Figure (cartoon, rainbow, N blue to C red):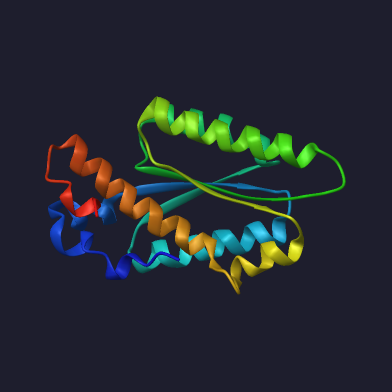
Length: 170
């Protein structure tokens, strides 16, 4: 689990104060709403804590996430996109196709548009594993997604403004 409150980025990156001016878009699915809504709540709690503006776009399912992410990235108005969903294995191979399409699509948007696209889509064997990742035994992946977005926004800002990025490396 990540925790940006302990990050050296807050101490060393000159532009971190401007993160409050950032707009992070959440794309969430209607499918498995109980779990996805919890992911969103975790995102919104952390974003609110850092006074980061958010907006949420709802799509039917995980396969639809990359198209909306691409359209949002084209707008060039957002500093990061967080994709939220829960794909839970069923009895058919449909799970494999959905996971592959959404993960490859999100990665493509990130690389094509040079915007952080955070993959907050849970891909689990069962509902119990998904619940464990929204505040259970495995932390809260919604909170982790915002932490990753904040970190990536700052790293991208550093790289695009030619600041020293050594603090992002270990």
